[in-house]
Image (cartoon, rainbow, N blue to C red; front, side, top):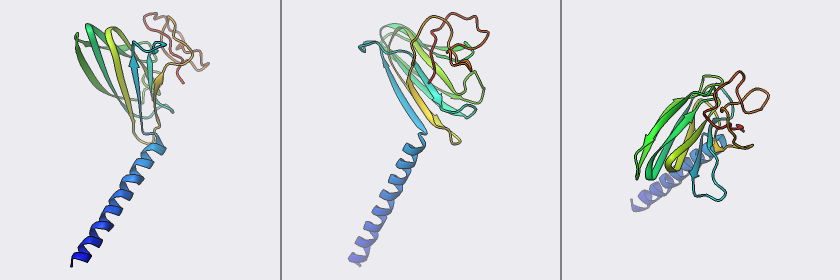
Length: 173
Protein backbone atom coordinates (compact mmCIF):
# COMPACT_ATOMS: atom_id res chain seq x y z
CA UNK A 1 0.00 0.00 0.00
CA UNK A 2 2.78 2.45 0.94
CA UNK A 3 4.70 1.57 -2.22
CA UNK A 4 1.68 2.18 -4.45
CA UNK A 5 1.04 5.54 -2.73
CA UNK A 6 4.68 6.56 -3.18
CA UNK A 7 4.64 5.56 -6.87
CA UNK A 8 1.41 7.51 -7.40
CA UNK A 9 2.94 10.59 -5.73
CA UNK A 10 6.07 10.38 -7.90
CA UNK A 11 4.04 9.97 -11.10
CA UNK A 12 1.77 12.88 -10.16
CA UNK A 13 4.79 15.08 -9.39
CA UNK A 14 6.44 14.21 -12.70
CA UNK A 15 3.20 14.87 -14.61
CA UNK A 16 2.69 18.24 -12.89
CA UNK A 17 6.31 19.26 -13.47
CA UNK A 18 6.04 18.29 -17.15
CA UNK A 19 2.83 20.31 -17.57
CA UNK A 20 4.42 23.36 -15.93
CA UNK A 21 7.54 23.01 -18.12
CA UNK A 22 5.46 22.71 -21.29
CA UNK A 23 3.29 25.69 -20.33
CA UNK A 24 6.31 27.87 -19.55
CA UNK A 25 8.15 26.90 -22.72
CA UNK A 26 5.04 27.52 -24.82
CA UNK A 27 4.67 30.94 -23.21
CA UNK A 28 8.31 31.76 -23.91
CA UNK A 29 8.18 30.46 -27.50
CA UNK A 30 5.05 32.37 -28.39
CA UNK A 31 6.24 35.55 -26.67
CA UNK A 32 2.80 36.20 -25.26
CA UNK A 33 4.27 38.52 -22.62
CA UNK A 34 6.91 41.25 -22.59
CA UNK A 35 8.10 43.70 -19.94
CA UNK A 36 10.26 46.80 -19.74
CA UNK A 37 11.47 49.19 -17.04
CA UNK A 38 12.13 52.93 -17.11
CA UNK A 39 14.31 54.80 -14.60
CA UNK A 40 15.20 58.49 -14.86
CA UNK A 41 18.55 58.01 -13.07
CA UNK A 42 19.85 55.48 -15.63
CA UNK A 43 23.11 56.31 -17.38
CA UNK A 44 22.55 57.04 -20.21
CA UNK A 45 19.00 58.19 -19.44
CA UNK A 46 16.21 55.82 -20.46
CA UNK A 47 14.11 56.78 -23.48
CA UNK A 48 10.31 56.43 -23.53
CA UNK A 49 8.91 52.91 -23.79
CA UNK A 50 7.15 51.44 -26.78
CA UNK A 51 4.97 48.40 -26.14
CA UNK A 52 2.50 46.33 -28.11
CA UNK A 53 2.45 43.51 -30.62
CA UNK A 54 4.74 42.59 -33.48
CA UNK A 55 1.81 42.38 -35.92
CA UNK A 56 -1.14 44.81 -36.09
CA UNK A 57 -4.84 44.23 -35.55
CA UNK A 58 -4.58 41.84 -32.60
CA UNK A 59 -5.83 42.57 -29.07
CA UNK A 60 -3.44 42.97 -26.15
CA UNK A 61 -3.49 44.09 -22.53
CA UNK A 62 -1.11 46.83 -21.39
CA UNK A 63 -0.28 47.34 -17.72
CA UNK A 64 1.72 50.41 -16.67
CA UNK A 65 2.87 51.40 -13.17
CA UNK A 66 4.60 54.66 -12.33
CA UNK A 67 6.30 55.87 -9.14
CA UNK A 68 6.69 59.57 -8.28
CA UNK A 69 9.57 60.39 -5.94
CA UNK A 70 9.63 63.74 -4.16
CA UNK A 71 7.13 65.56 -6.35
CA UNK A 72 3.99 64.65 -8.29
CA UNK A 73 4.22 63.64 -11.91
CA UNK A 74 2.41 61.92 -14.75
CA UNK A 75 2.87 59.14 -17.22
CA UNK A 76 1.11 59.00 -20.56
CA UNK A 77 0.13 56.32 -23.03
CA UNK A 78 0.52 57.97 -26.42
CA UNK A 79 -1.24 56.57 -29.45
CA UNK A 80 0.11 56.54 -32.98
CA UNK A 81 -2.36 59.24 -34.08
CA UNK A 82 -1.01 61.67 -31.44
CA UNK A 83 -3.85 61.27 -28.91
CA UNK A 84 -2.87 60.34 -25.36
CA UNK A 85 -4.18 59.20 -22.00
CA UNK A 86 -2.46 60.85 -19.02
CA UNK A 87 -2.32 59.45 -15.50
CA UNK A 88 -1.43 61.55 -12.43
CA UNK A 89 0.89 60.10 -9.80
CA UNK A 90 0.88 61.83 -6.38
CA UNK A 91 4.23 62.69 -4.78
CA UNK A 92 5.92 59.77 -3.01
CA UNK A 93 3.29 57.37 -4.31
CA UNK A 94 2.55 55.06 -7.22
CA UNK A 95 -0.26 54.61 -9.70
CA UNK A 96 -1.10 51.68 -11.99
CA UNK A 97 -3.46 51.24 -14.91
CA UNK A 98 -4.45 48.35 -17.12
CA UNK A 99 -5.80 48.98 -20.62
CA UNK A 100 -7.29 46.63 -23.20
CA UNK A 101 -5.78 47.74 -26.51
CA UNK A 102 -5.20 46.60 -30.08
CA UNK A 103 -7.35 46.36 -33.12
CA UNK A 104 -7.46 50.02 -34.16
CA UNK A 105 -4.88 50.37 -36.95
CA UNK A 106 -2.56 53.37 -36.66
CA UNK A 107 -4.01 54.23 -33.23
CA UNK A 108 -3.29 51.47 -30.69
CA UNK A 109 -2.20 48.81 -33.15
CA UNK A 110 0.35 47.43 -33.23
CA UNK A 111 1.90 49.51 -30.41
CA UNK A 112 1.80 52.62 -28.20
CA UNK A 113 4.47 54.79 -26.55
CA UNK A 114 4.71 55.44 -22.80
CA UNK A 115 6.35 58.62 -21.48
CA UNK A 116 6.72 60.31 -18.10
CA UNK A 117 6.92 63.88 -16.83
CA UNK A 118 7.54 65.61 -13.52
CA UNK A 119 8.34 63.51 -10.49
CA UNK A 120 7.70 60.11 -12.08
CA UNK A 121 11.13 58.55 -11.64
CA UNK A 122 10.42 54.95 -12.58
CA UNK A 123 7.87 52.96 -14.57
CA UNK A 124 7.21 49.37 -15.43
CA UNK A 125 5.18 48.27 -18.44
CA UNK A 126 3.92 44.79 -19.31
CA UNK A 127 2.13 43.50 -22.39
CA UNK A 128 0.01 40.35 -22.58
CA UNK A 129 -0.86 39.27 -26.12
CA UNK A 130 -4.11 37.54 -27.01
CA UNK A 131 -5.21 35.51 -30.03
CA UNK A 132 -1.78 34.41 -31.19
CA UNK A 133 -0.13 37.83 -31.02
CA UNK A 134 3.55 38.20 -30.13
CA UNK A 135 4.27 40.86 -27.50
CA UNK A 136 7.17 43.28 -27.18
CA UNK A 137 8.00 46.11 -24.80
CA UNK A 138 11.23 48.05 -25.14
CA UNK A 139 12.76 51.51 -25.17
CA UNK A 140 12.25 53.71 -28.23
CA UNK A 141 14.80 53.16 -30.95
CA UNK A 142 16.19 55.51 -33.54
CA UNK A 143 16.19 58.53 -31.26
CA UNK A 144 13.55 60.70 -29.67
CA UNK A 145 12.98 64.26 -30.87
CA UNK A 146 10.26 66.88 -30.75
CA UNK A 147 7.18 66.21 -32.80
CA UNK A 148 4.50 63.57 -32.63
CA UNK A 149 4.65 59.90 -32.01
CA UNK A 150 3.64 57.48 -34.66
CA UNK A 151 4.77 55.24 -37.43
CA UNK A 152 4.24 56.13 -41.04
CA UNK A 153 4.37 53.43 -43.66
CA UNK A 154 7.66 54.93 -44.84
CA UNK A 155 9.24 54.18 -41.43
CA UNK A 156 9.88 57.85 -40.61
CA UNK A 157 8.34 57.57 -37.15
CA UNK A 158 5.66 60.21 -37.75
CA UNK A 159 2.08 59.59 -38.77
CA UNK A 160 1.05 61.13 -42.07
CA UNK A 161 -0.71 64.53 -41.97
CA UNK A 162 0.09 65.06 -38.30
CA UNK A 163 0.49 68.58 -36.92
CA UNK A 164 0.71 67.80 -33.18
CA UNK A 165 4.01 68.75 -31.55
CA UNK A 166 3.30 67.87 -27.92
CA UNK A 167 5.01 64.48 -27.79
CA UNK A 168 8.39 63.04 -28.74
CA UNK A 169 8.83 60.98 -31.88
CA UNK A 170 9.42 57.32 -31.30
CA UNK A 171 10.68 55.17 -34.14
CA UNK A 172 8.78 52.02 -33.37
CA UNK A 173 10.66 48.75 -33.88
